[in-house]
Amino acid sequence: MELQLEFGDYYLVDENDNTIATTDKIMLKVDGSIEKLSKENCDEVYGSEVEIVTEPYVKYVSRSLDTVYPPLGKRNKLDENGCIILKKNI
Image 1 (cartoon, rainbow, N blue to C red):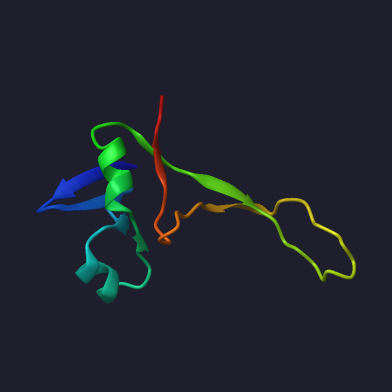
Image 2 (cartoon, rainbow, N blue to C red):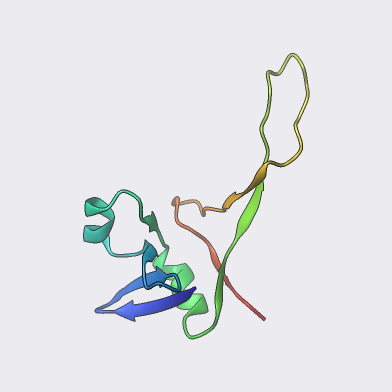
């Protein structure tokens, strides 16, 4: 994945140059499959290899059972504004 900066907006693109996430508000409105990036977060990692921070996806069952199933995979971790969190690969 690569983080690109064009005309003041950031685009996280895959190896086929498909946009996965962006700060571009117009693109977010037009294409519902693209995730939202935080500009502040992009500024922190721009110019380096980036990784989407993920967290284990845990399915919770009814409270009466007090049972938690093992993680079923991972999902993107979002910040307080619902934006994908990126980090530098070291």
